[in-house]
Image (cartoon, rainbow over all chains, first blue to last red; front, side, top):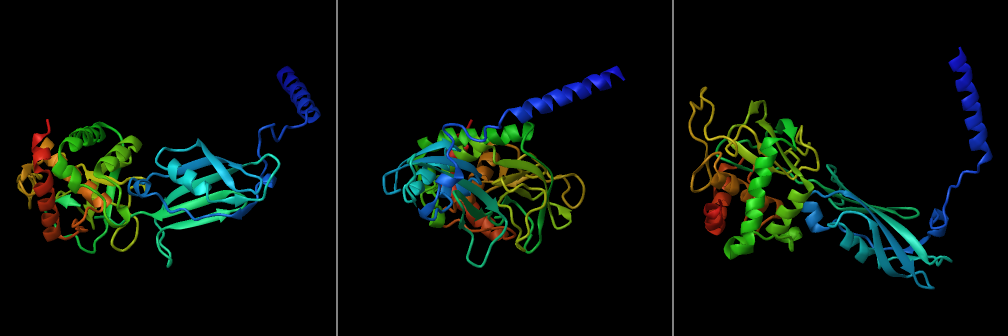
Length: 142
Length: 196
């Protein structure tokens, strides 16, 4: 009984504490989705070695823009070695609406799939504002 | 596919007890590492083991290094249709002829070695119809479960994965398996027989 009462007091104190502290959704270096508006982009093929070795994963690229929104520099923040070079090459072909920070982030998501569509085996799909999914289908047994 | 028997055309493959760890995985990794070390010193095999078509630019050495690094391979008990397949040593790929996924194998697996095939076994089971006969691998008929047999099997699979020029899809086609094995022998015999 005593324990229950103490837990209730603690819970109320905790709720009071978090309600009085505004949640910090963004930090100083955070690039908001609102700052990323793609004007033009280039498709990316699944890199051959990554495809033959079934390497999947996510590569996050930070790109610096010039005054016109063209990517002038691209750096991988995370990702696997086999996938990164193709992403950096690809990012340099994108253009964005200029933003004050002159920086954007692109997320590349590489997935092997069993599905084959009428248009073939390799697909590139961009979801706004910056999420690119590159798929390739797994081979038949041989 | 590498193996020494069975026309599996049009039948689906499945794998029981697929695993990417344990002593069998360590054995496969060890053989891949030996090939990785030997390849740069064997010009004939290294020059032959190169990707073609959409895989142009991918070398066998890169493929082995990348697959090893990601541990994107495994082993298990392979069946074709409803029968366990002692005659299949290993296969690459994930989709059956009818386009369904090979049951039991994750999409990340580039190739699967058969726990009951010639990679890990010198003999077939004693029970009929095999009567304990030897598992013989490749053109030179290396005895199963020897380093030579294991290397021949993994080079064969690597050639499939990167589509070496002249190497054909051979699942369920024993004659094509033999032709592919001959290419492995012609180009990589020296490497295979030099491994220690």
